[in-house]
Length: 264
Ligand SMILES: NC(=O)c1ccc[n+]([C@@H]2O[C@H](COP(=O)([O-])OP(=O)(O)OC[C@H]3O[C@@H](n4cnc5c(N)ncnc54)[C@H](OP(=O)(O)O)[C@@H]3O)[C@@H](O)[C@H]2O)c1
Image (cartoon, rainbow, N blue to C red; front, side):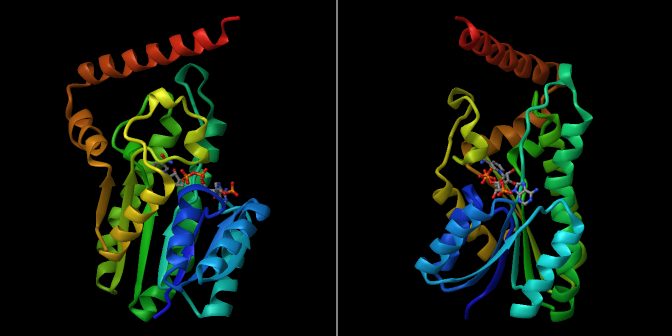
């Protein structure tokens, strides 16, 4: 039977790849994002793959936009079977140029954007005693990665929020799946120095792994394991002096590379 699925942030990257893969199973897919032209491309791919697309353009950090979008979904499909909360931004935020504005913008999208959708979809899922909510956190949520304080802490907030909701909603047959990917090729990571990224996966492979985890209703899924083990088990448990030594070494390497790039 066709599922009614929401994917936020489906105008590019992992969101678009998930939308196309789920369309091959003839599902109905509501896609969100701010760039309408990019969303149209995703909608075309969904249709070509055999699915039905509902295009919802707008900013997920605006509560009134989310209310309007969920209203359209309800009117058209009566509700959702899956809500995949994937929209996110990553802005570099070095401590010596700390910007509260970057911090606010990051939380407004990565945390509040998800929270507005949770507030919209949970009542109907609870009433129907049916639903799966999946949130895309990150392996960056387990430690405060240098120069990424805003991103790491936003993904940690999302992870902890989902952990809490998973327990609350289990009694209502609503499953909550938390996904923590490592590096995946997308517009977000295209701006990174490739030498800073290890065990990088294509968006299609990442999307497949995420969809498999959602189908299995995995509580907490992190991948790929060669990066997940150090990020979830080793780095968070090291004496902080050892962690600082490793992280500072990595930052020095990055600054040196930046200087070399800037040199005439
Ligand atoms: N790539 C990785 O290595 C990686 C690793 C771990 C976790 N993740 C997470 O995976 C998710 C998808 O990222 P990606 O790698 O696929 O990056 P991406 O290609 O940049 O996709 C991000 C998506 O989020 C949407 N978005 C951003 N801000 C939004 C807003 N205010 N309102 C509505 N939509 C918004 C973007 O659409 P518009 O620009 O059109 O609004 C885009 O569709 C993110 O949550 C990211 O943090 C990525």
